[in-house]
Image 1: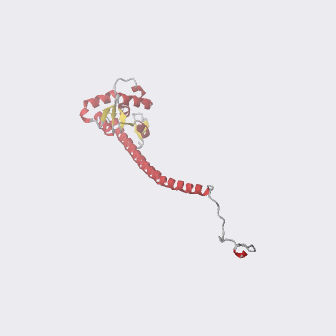
Image 2: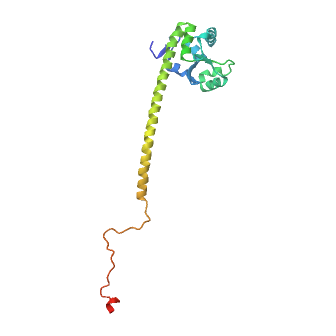
Image 3: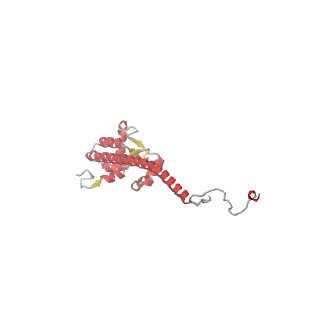
Length: 196
């Protein structure tokens, strides 16, 4: 059996890990799997999973498993088509974190649950790596934006200088060259002093 697949029945029905990843949701800032999806992966009914969790409630602290509120349930049902069967259910579903999913497999104590739990953990780890990569990418993108802001300001300054050079000036244009600013003598004209 490959690392990318989970054997779901004795008939060798295989489900890709990507499908397991699609069952992982983000609720209250935590990555969780709803009880209905976890029960399906482990090959038991949701009722049996919840019975075992109730019998072993001391093994499931708040950071392993919690109950969704009505608003969270409505949002999950609205966003996930495969959970539409929960829409009219009066019970609020449980949400299992990565550690809760492992604990549920140990509580169920079936070979299929233990085998599937390995792939559930791998799916959680893969999502954690993807999120870490995205955070690094977001940080680099932010640095690039900051770097380009400086360039944008410099480019704007260059364009402003070019616009000022291209703008027509209202100042008087001076002639180029050498000019003498002496009074011109009137040659051949008589002045008052010369009449004497």
